[in-house]
Image (cartoon, rainbow, N blue to C red; front, side, top):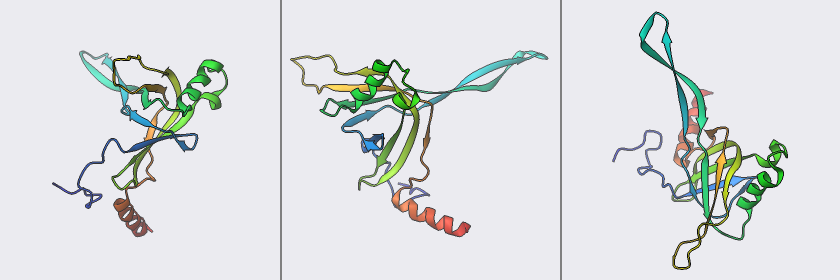
Length: 175
């Protein structure tokens, strides 16, 4: 298997189940699912006046998809508390009250942070307190949040451990 150029010691991709979600400066207990971070750019089609048979395509509005967080129902009320801010205040309580920046951290097998994404100005557009309940089933009770957001970016200050040494060496050469 080929080695990564940025980290020659890391052969395998990072696992998608070693992650944590943080808001208000604290990791939220029990988050077991985070939907993909995706964005799309609207395609704007235009026709030039001199060429009615050909269409040019230009980038338009950038749209960030909602993020879904799921976890097994626990005594921790972080999901419910955030969702209730919209319901109780009707969104009129000000941006500081119901919008939050969240952090999604990915960890390697040694529990070292290797990747982090900052998601900006999230707010709860859907909250599921309990799933369908079935006495004949064996499922865990899951609650979920659907978070609208105003974009996300990779936190470039988070560098995988072996890559951190390479990054520091590169920075020293620049100076």
